[in-house]
Every structure is written in C-alpha cells, then in structure tokens.
Length: 217
Image 1 (cartoon, rainbow, N blue to C red):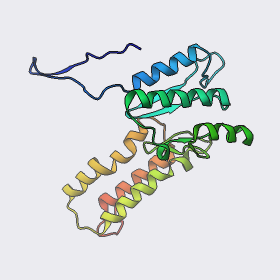
Image 2: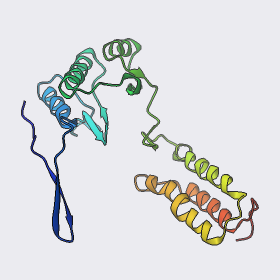
Image 3: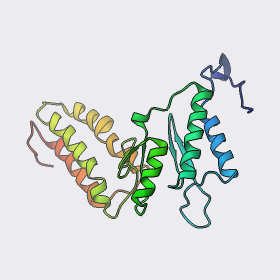
C-alpha cells in the first residue's frame, strides 16, 4: 500500500517563509477512506444514495469523527468490520466501541438489525438527533427541532438577568455570546421566521431590562 509520507508545513509571515513542521502522527483517515473506496470498487460495500442517479455515499469525515454508510446486511457489515480492524492494526489506533454508535433506516427488520449488531458490536441508537450540537436530520416541524436554540438562549439570559450589567457589558454579552449561539446554525439551516422573532425578542428584553425586569423598548 502506497501513501504520502513526505508532507511538511511552513508559515508565511509578511511574505517570508519561516520554519518547517513535519507531521509525525503516522497514518490517518486517508488510509481508511482508501480501503473503503477499494471495497466499493470490488462491490463489497454499498453506500447510500439520495436519488437513483446520485453517487453512493459511504463516508463523511469531520475533524477526528467519521460517519460510515452501508447496507444493513451481513456482507456490508463484515466489510466495515474488516476495514476498521485492519485500520486499527496499521495505524496503532483502537476503535472506541463506547463512543461508536449506529442507527438504521426506518423499515429495517429486527432480524437484520440483530445480525449487523452482532457483527459490528456497536451500540444501537433509534436515530442520531444531533452532531456537533447541530441537528443530524430535519423532520416535518423545524420549529420543534430548533426549539433548543431558544431554550439555550433563555438559559443564558436567566443567569445574567439578575446582574447589574452596564450597557457596554450587555453589548459585549449580546455580540460575543448570545448572537453566537444561533449564528453557526443559521449558516447551515434556514430557521423558522417565528423562532427568529422569538430570539430577537429575548435579546431585546435582555438589552432593555434591568435586574430581571423586562423594561420598555
């Protein structure tokens, strides 16, 4: 198996190059993804398709986390297990079963679930509600899904409501903390207009209120 082993990094400062950093952590996700692609080309692993003509998706990588997709059948399950075991031997890393979860499509029968669960040994979840604090999937009611934003914002406000903060202090809180709560969600999802108005209302109450009272806008 061939892989890139001569990567190095440098810093640019005012147009000049400084220093050389040579990574020494060894093999990473690229090796596992290569093994997955090889299994797909051999017909040993099948990903998920969002449309009949769309390409199959077998993996998504985020920092040090990896999402794998395959058919709920023994053949694909054995392939995934063999890939993970081989990757662990090559890289010297170990798969943490306590932090590894799996879920099935809604119409998967219990017998199939039992077979794949026995092969892989992962903990089964009904569904992945969130990933990195963001919804893993959207249902029919976006208002219910994103209600946690209002609850989180309200929790912050209740903690600060009794404090006698100056206008400058409130402005810092709003810009650096309160508005940062929904901003990373809004960069990926379109929030319901009613929820946005509700969040803005809570921020206005915090800005104009004093010692827990609402105050007048």
